Image (cartoon, rainbow, N blue to C red; front, side, top):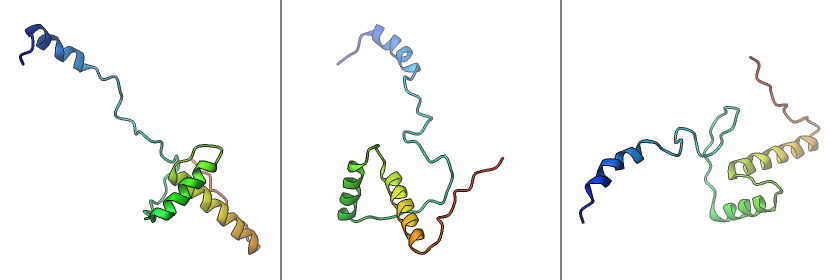
Length: 93
């Protein structure tokens, strides 16, 4: 199949501008830099995590859900031992 000559001449003009900015990440990242910890979850654990996420009022990603669960359990455990949970340190300029 041969394309008409006029189509070839204006094809590059339509492809010059991109409608999408691909320099920004697709997902938001945490505003605070931390240590990345890779964790493998078994299928049953993923199903349980996804079920918990579905029950939450606000939509959460899996990493956000794991952080929320961790904060909650650490808070509960700190109350049981009479300890206070670690306070978040504010970044100073």
